[in-house]
Image: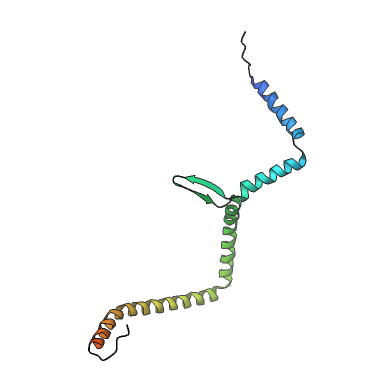
Length: 135
């Protein structure tokens, strides 16, 4: 005969059932609610601390990620509907943006191309005393 306690599956199940039954008597309803509130806050609303190699960092809370992921599709769908209903306005604004962008790009290119020769021309005029040095 052995002195070891045998833990059969039936014994384990009886212990677990006893713990499940008694846990209700160990904790009041208010304590359970407070525990649940704290657990939900920690699980969904606290930033997630990540340890990674040489430095630790925080990720956004799970709730923020969930809301952003859910809202991304809804916002995209709402924008698609609005753009479909306002095609003429969208088209004219795109045209204006392209014109402004193209005009700005042309101006920037011309400014870049002429800035070097104009600086040389100015330096020659300053050397000849035709204009005064500004610096």
